[in-house]
Length: 67
Image 1 (tube, rainbow, N blue to C red):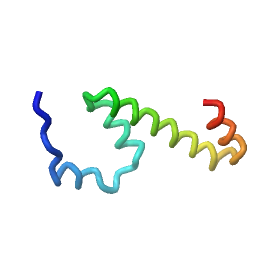
Image 2 (cartoon, rainbow, N blue to C red):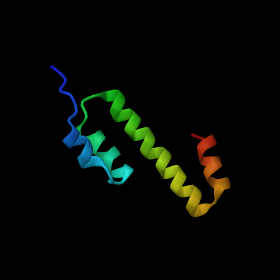
Image 3 (cartoon, rainbow, N blue to C red):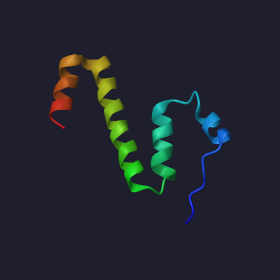
């Protein structure tokens, strides 16, 4: 299958959208297993950062170190 280049319209459509939404779309629509795994890892990282702001830095550091 031949890969098609990304168009300006596709890139413009994504601007301003929340990163978690874009990462979930990548997971659902990509055919590239490496890209899907990277999006999953980025979502996990975002979740850990959210925890840092909610429950404190020490808990977030513990979560990062134990993964």
